[in-house]
Each structure stands twice: as C-alpha cells, then as structure tokens.
Image 1 (cartoon, rainbow, N blue to C red):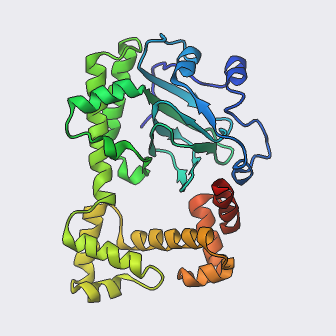
Image 2 (tube, one colour; image 1 turned 180 degrees about the vertical axis):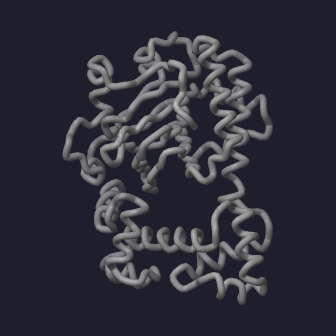
Length: 319
C-alpha cells in the first residue's frame, strides 16, 4: 500500500506519549527480546489510547498511524488490534510463535493475547493500527453470520504474498472513509471494515484449513515426515504427478510444497527446542537440516533469533 496522503491520529512517541506509555515501551538500546520474558505483562486499555489520540471517550473504533522507534514491553489489551506494516520490518512474539512481519504484512491480535512487537534493523518502521472496542466487534459479528467469533480468537498473520490487491483496496477504502468522516465510526465506515475483515478471513482460511482430500493428505504426510519428505516422494505416495501436485497445493493453500515442508521442519525443530533436552546439533539432525550451521542460519532468518535464544525465550515464558 503506498504512503497515505491524509492525516490519521498518531501514536508517534512525543514526550506526552512516552510519559504515558513508559510501562509499555522499551527505551533500551541493548534490547534483546529473550531478556524481556521475565517482565510482567503490561495491560493496555482502549480508554487510555483514546485519550492519547485525542478521540472522544465514547469512541469504539480508532485508526492510528505511527513510526515504531522502540520495542514494546510484553503486553495485552482489552480491544481487538489489526496491524498493517506500511514500511520496514517487525519482530512479533506471542507465547507460542515468533514471526517476522515484513513490509506489507497484516496481523490480527485478539483481546488478551500477550505479545511483544519490536522494529528490526535501523530502517524506519511505520505501521497503521486499527483498534476495535469489543462491544462494537460483537455487534459486527451479530450483523454478519459469516463472521464466526471462533475464527477471531487466535492471532492471525498474513505475509505480504497473501495480502492481495483486493485486501489493500478494502483497507484503504475503510481508512479513507474513517478519515473523511472525521474519525467517526459511521455505519458506512463499519460496513467497509466488515467487508475487509470478511475478505481477510477468506484469504487466510484456505491456507490453514484446506478442505479438499488431496491437500489434507499432502499436508498430513508433510507433517508426519517433515524431516525426510520431498515432492518426489509425495507424488509417489499420493499417486499424482509432481507437476499436478505442486500446482494443486499452491492453488489451494497459497504456498508451495517446498514452503510447507520448510514450515513443518521449522515447527518440529521449535517443538524439540521447547520440549526436549537434545542439543542444537541433534535437533538439526532430527529435523532434517543439512548441518547445525544450516539450521542456525535458516532459523535466524525466519525468526531473527538463534535456536538457543528461542529456547531461552519460550521456556522462560512458561515459568
């Protein structure tokens, strides 16, 4: 999405914001996410954000843009958050996952989800946040039977390759309408938001919940044999040509077979890092990586953390 040429409420860290959210931001130049786990989770209130954004205390919807100059503390909130990375990269941590959000990524964060967000690299990182009060969210779900509450109970992340032009257009239309109506959640604005959320669910659902038998069988084999499986073996076991299988999986899930295998290997490695006392080298071997250094490099590329740091991070979070 190109830079917006209209002014949204801002959470840029001036002195007032820094003072108000001193328990929410980290101002340490030596910040390392796996050292922050032991800190108590902060709670961010919708009411406090409205005051900072100079919006009416009765508002149930807010859209704000800001440059992320500082990492956040571990925190949760009493509202629904939808984050779009306009430029730059972010590290997003929850109790169960570590994800790099590249420019163009979308992230949905439900109420009560403890998480940490930190800018990566030295380049500017600008985000657009849509914040929805739970009362308004319940009304939206009641109006649209296709928006199941269950689908919104866990974090949802769409990488840039899955954020298509239609989603971007709907997001821009919603934000522009919000701006033109002077930051008021009119019925038209809410309708645009519902349209966007509906498309977001449709875009995300096939990737995680393929319904056709072939895709289910393929993903099951990848999960069970992640350390050794490849496209050739899958085609033999499923009795389909490699070309047909490759095209079908990409069409149904949005990812290639190789990407699914890489994700499954990484998931298995993460599980071993958390639940076993195996060494990093042993985990690399059992997960199907060529070497410990290969595993180290790929793991850090995907999570920005080394395998050892990841083990520290999540095991400490469980204590």
